[in-house]
Structures are given as C-alpha cells and as structure tokens.
Image (cartoon, rainbow over all chains, first blue to last red; front, side, top):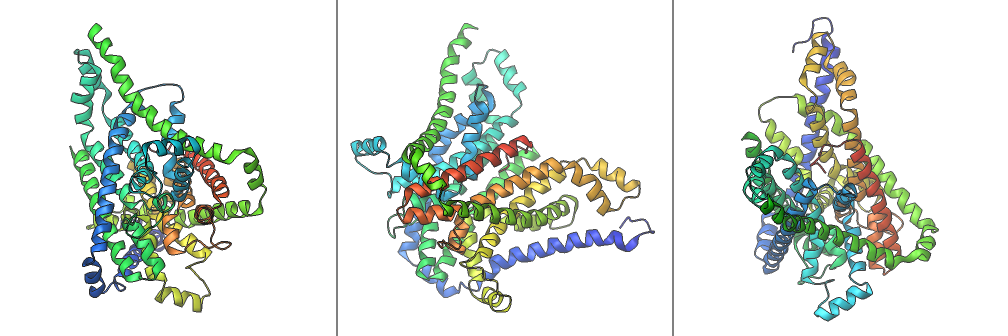
Length: 270
Length: 267
C-alpha cells in the first residue's frame, strides 16, 4: 500500500495476518450456522411447521415475551429516567444492583426466584391470592422480566443520558413544569433510543431459557416456550426438530435486533 | 414559580417510585435467599470441598475462555476499526450473529455441528471430547463471548483519534509497530474493561452450556450448571450458596468495569 520501499515484506505481514484472521472468523461463523442446515432436511422443516405443538410454543413465546416487555417498559422507563437525572445517596449502589442480573447466570436467577417465592410470608401471600407463581404461566413472565428489566434499564438510561440537558433547562426556564418538560421535550428527543431499548428487552425476554427452566421447569404442553421446547427435543434425541426451533428463534432475534440497529442508525444520521 | 414547585413532588415521586420499586424487587429476591440460607448453612457449605472445586472450575474455564476470546477479539476489533472495504457491513453483521442469536440456540447449533461429524473426528483422531466434557464448556464460552469482545474492542479502537496513527505512520512506523506502540497503550484501560466484561459473561454462561455440553456431576459442573444440578436434586441450600458466589463474582466484575471507566451502554 503506502509502505516505504525499504521494508516491503515484514510490513505486509501484519495486515495480511489480520486479514486472514478476519477470514477465519467469518468462515467459523458461517460453519456454525451452515453446518446445522445439513441436519435440517426439508422433510423435518415441513413436519415441524405442520405440528400444532410448534405453533402453540411459538404463540406462548410471543405472548409471554410481549407481556414481559410491556411490564418492563412501564416500570423501567421511569426508573431509567430517575437513574439518569436524580442524584441521591446510594446512586452508584442502585445502578450496580439494577445491572447485576446481566452478569448473573440465568440458572442463578431462576433459583433465586424459586427460593424467594417459596419463602413463608410470600407463600402465604400467594395462598391468599389463590395461585402459585412457580411452575405457572405468569411465572414465565416473572422469570423473563428479571433479565429484560436489567437490559432495558441500561439501554433506556443511556438514551436519557444522550438527551441534551440544555433543551430541558430552556423548557423549564420558559415556565414548563417538570412533568410537561418530560412529556414534550425529553420523551420525544429520546424516542429512538427508548424504542431500541424496548426491542432489546423483547429480544432478551424471547431468548430467556435458563431462569424459566428452573423457576417454571420444562413441562411439555404447559411451560414449553420455544427455547424450553428445544431443550426438551434435544433431551428426547429429536435433534432435527430442535434445529428447526433453533433456526426460528435465531430468525426472530435477528429480525428484532436488526430493527433495533436500524432505529439506532437513523437516530445517528439525524 | 409556585406552580412549578407544586408539580414537583408528584413528578419526583412517580419516577423515584418506579426506581425504588425496581430496586426493592431485586433486594427482596436477594434478602429472601439470604434468610433462606442462614449462617450455619453458609459455613457448612463453604467448608465442603465440592463448593471450591466448582468455584475453581468456573473461574478457570472462564479465565481460559477469556484469554482465547480476547486474543481473537483484539486483532479482529482492530482490523474492523481500520479496514474499509465494500460489503463490510455484511461481514460485521455476520460476525455479530453469535450475540444476536439466543445463547440457547447457539448451544443447539454447536451441538448440531460437533455432536456428529466433526466432533466424532476430533475425538477419534485428537482425543478431544467436546460434548459432555470440559473443552466443550470452554468452546461454548468462547463462541458466546468472542463476538461480544470484538464489538467492544472495535469501539475502543475507534475511539482513538486517527491523527495519532497518521503522525506515527508519517514518521515511518509500520502498521504493526503503530498497533503495538500507539493503539494498544491508548486503548489499554478500555481493553482491560472489555476483558472484565468478557470474563463476567463467560462466567455467567449457562444456556449454551446446558444445550451443548449438558450438566454432568463431577465433570462439567461449573457453578451455573451446579446450580441446576443441585436444584433438580433438591439440594436448594447448596444451590443457593453457588448462586451467592456467582452474584459476588458478578458484583466484583461490574465494580472493576466501572472503575476502569467502561463506555456506558455496553454490556
């Protein structure tokens, strides 16, 4: 390229090795996905897609993850705003606590929920309401919401941090109340980032498997959201069906996160 | 002015209340678990050899996976931050796939890939067993964390102003010596933060392991899998000890990342 003529070969070695490493990484990634295509014949695809059980699992996954996303958004967006703007003692601790689930193994989250919801006072409370959270459909939502909330709050806090404070100060100096400033200035300015955060939370809720497996167990026909159904298939030795489910999960995540990237890209371009 | 002040408590209460609710929910889960365990159980299980064997296995496999991941991620991140070619977005999207796809699906794909053909070949010719064995644990951790490391490293290198590189190159430094003498020192703290992040992620990996290697007592029982094994065996107390150890390591790594000044919004 633009190398001085004095050291032609050794100077080329470094870029060449970088390029070949890049090529190897790309090949390995392609192999990971393409290698599984050979397991999935058209017959398996047709068989799985014509099963009612597959579509019920898909509906269950969609339903629970959307409910989770809605709950997490309602709680998480105001919480993220408070975390971004308010200063109070213990701010750092609260921030750390809210992002802790991101670095916790999903099995740990599931177990902690299981233990917490069989604690005497909580058990008594559940008896009073009349239903148990563990091993039930609402339990799936609770298990998904822990990680989705942590991921969402981080993204939403970053979105609020990116909003220029001066616009808020101007609105306030012109006599707008704090609530009105939030609704008319901050919220529209952070719109793209907030939507991207909600999509991210949705993708994590959809992908959640470990916590559901422990908190709600893997019960065919009851708690078998797509990842759980995939796990059951692998254990039953039906690898072909599991691959079909794996690819449909991958496709959904890529679509959701692709939409998130596009939102982020348009925001950056503006 | 009076109007504005009157609206203030309601506003703060609403938003602060949401934050307090989220924090209380997590504190409640932690507290219920701490009360469930009690001091005597803590001491009893911390004196067990198995607790520390699983702890060491977790820290060790995650450490090994972090070394491999970062050795790949640093040059890859550098290459992606400097190279400009047509179709680069496609290549980057491809390399991002392992973090976009749910970890459980990644574990499934690893099983599909290594469960039969290539895996059998590796085992017969090299004697490396992946499924149901420790090398598989490390491989799954690397696959899940490497793409993530590449992203963070690329961001770290892109944050360095191109002027430094231009100056070094104009003075006759090769790309290699620019990388080692200019980029690496400038990106040091960001790369250290990335290493902590990758390590924390590798340590917390569970879903891909569950599908790829499976939980086997005494063989693949890193802490997240030990939690699963103990829970299904009804040993909830021991599983709780493991989950507190995981939480402790998570707090330490988050704290270290914060101290190193990681760029916000990543993790």
